[in-house]
Amino acid sequence: MQNDSFKPLIKAENIKKYYKNGEIKALDDVSLEIKKGEVVVIIGPSGSGKSTMLRTLNLLEIPTEGKITYDGEDITDSKTNINNYRMKVGMVFQHFNLFPHMSVLKNMTIAPTKLLKKDKEEAKNTAMELLKRVNLENRAEAYPSQLSGGQKQRVAIARALCMEPEVMLFDEPTSALDPEMVGEVLNVMKDLARQGMTMVVVTHEMGFAREVASRVIFMDEGKIIEEGTPEMVFEHPRSERTQSFLSKVI
Image (cartoon, rainbow, N blue to C red):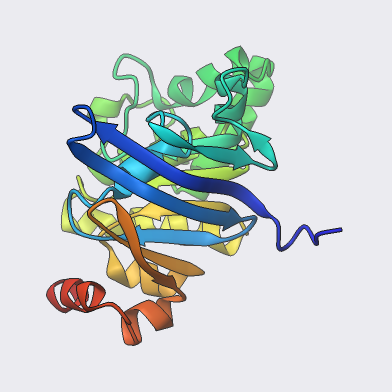
């Protein structure tokens, strides 16, 4: 029997995502595995397919070809209940996606009460605990328009955690923020990593990738060019394309 610690939690096999009848190859035969407890950071130039790859992992983008399994179940099968799957896989976007007409607390409790069928008091208690974790317990009654970008993104992370996900996907979570707000969001993500959350992160923050990633994947032109530990990719990149990219961003 295979040891669970070696078995991938998410496995993407030969993923292709084509647009315009195959003229644009956003993903060109990409395969990757994510193990439980891993922090996988995907880096690469704009347009390299990083975000498309991330979005296929919870089927916000449906692959043109290929298969994705989660804990052994084929989630690309048309019979799979995608909503049940998405409850296990939290997603944090570049632009927060908070409901502007709802308070922070309401933003955080609406999904657990509707989808997980939690009672309101339990959902509220969980939300307040998570707000405390991201240092925003005093902003529970505020509305998104009253928050800074960094605060909105921390709320977005806490909101995703309210669904008790097994995996968290982050799509360039700091790229829309002012530079001084980036650190507060990355600190929350570092805490999550330390607590053993399985994470896949698309980011331009190379310092975060070096410090937190268990594995770094470099993508370009819809393909995985190189992957390995942060030390392998940053200190000893094998591919000329990786070397060229890193020379411009580090």
